[in-house]
Every structure is written in C-alpha cells, then in structure tokens.
Image 1: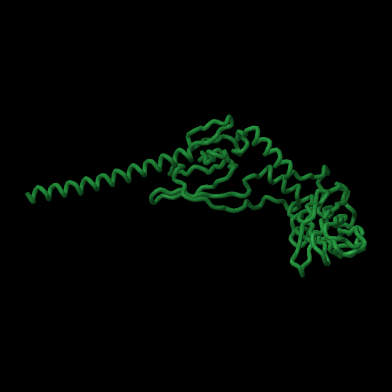
Image 2 (image 1 turned 90 degrees about the vertical axis):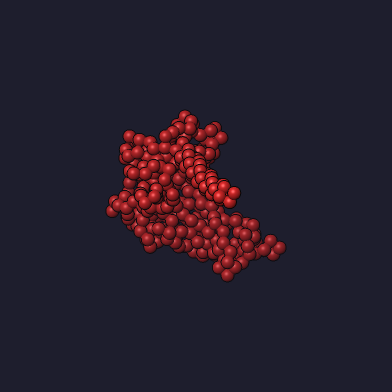
Length: 311
C-alpha cells in the first residue's frame, strides 16, 4: 500500500514539473511570436501592413518617412507643422564670411524709449544688422532671439520678431509687469549659417545617428539605426504599427531582428562642414552673441492705476 502511494506521489510530482516546463515554453514562444509580429510588420507606401521584418534596400539612402501613408487629417496637420517651422532664407548668392552678419557691429533701438509705458502696453524695438565690414546688410534671414527681463524681479518674456528681409527687423513685446524693464537681443545664427544647416538637413538627414543592441544568448551585435540609413545592406524595420512612425536598423549578421534589446544615441557625423562653412559657426563670434543697443536698453513701466503719459 505504501509502495503504491509513494509511486503515485512521485508520478504527480513529475507530472507537475512537466506542466510547469510546458507552460514556460509556451509563454516564451508566445512572447517571441508577439515581438516578431510587432517588430516585423511595417506600413508600406500604400498604407498596408507588410512583412517580413528584414528588408533589402537598393537605394543609396532610404528614408522611411518618404513612403509613409498619411490620412487627409494627418496631411493637413503635417502641412501646418511644416508651414509653422518654415524658415525664410533670402534668395541671394553664397557670400564670404566677411559679408555675413556681425552681431558686434549690428545694433537695436527702442522706439520712443523716453515715454512712460503702462503694464499691458506694447513695446517696439528696431534691429539693424551689419556685416563684418561694418556695412548694412540688404537681406534678412537671421535667427534673432529677443526678450525683456527684470533681474531683480526674476521676470522675463520673449518678443515676436518680424523680418523685413532688408537687414531690418522689428521686435514686439507686451509689457507684463511694472518697474525697469531691460531689452536684450541676441544673434543665435546668421542667415548664412542657417543656409548651411538647411543643406545638411536635406543632404545628410542621418548625420545624428543612433544604435541598438541585439543579443541572443552569448552572441551580441550593435547596429546603427535611424529614420534614414545609407547603403544597400538589409534592414530591420521597426516602424510603429499604430502611429506609422518609421524606424530602421541595419540587420545583424548573425542575429534576427527580433533580438533587439535596447536603443541609445550613437553620436554625430563629423567632417561635414568645409572651412568656409565652419566660419559661420564660431562660438564667441556669431553664435548666440548679444546685439548692443545704440541708446537706452531699458524702459520704465508703471502699473495701470498710476497716472502718467502712456505709450
């Protein structure tokens, strides 16, 4: 009797172990298939879901967003975003560095600075840019940042810059607090540098690159990833199924695309600028440099309840 009971007990234990092993195997397979499906399916130019995950690309530079299918609502949103971020670059020939914007020889003027302004009034500032030869520029396109601030109050606000495309800019501020308010204008990038940046954006969209680690057991490979990848090597397509956002990695030589375990920033491509182009990106010369005022750089603002001459 005891022998039979012992055998039955051993059999039940072995059966339980087998059930646990089978459950683990099934869960692992389901997770693998689920990951393989999510990462292996992508949206083609017609908006259809396509497999397999590894894709051979014959183009020199593949940009997934060029093949992304958008709905009419998404197209309207995309057009609005592109219009909002469109930078008006002047239609002029390339110029040498000495003809580019020099913040040290440029200046701004507060219009009617002697007036007493009230909270809520609008302040206007005129900016005139010059080149490194001290000559007035005849075109615009510079990236200017303008702000008003009162350091003692730790208060500040940004201004709206209007480019007249002739070397003159006007900045509009809304005065939001009383007291002495100072105006600061800075050149972030000259128009000549912005032209170079736009060229790099179009010609080298993969200049900032990312990487992913693929691992299975003791084998691991690190591959380059981006929206656009050059060359004709096979790619792993990780386009998001729900948003349609494209993303690609070069396919590992020994591992499947489903073995990707992380994602991180790789770095920046170097040596993309010529010596002439680099002159437009000099720290302490023409990047994020202040433009001085030719007169007072501050105004007095009074509260609405105070009597006085109002601008």
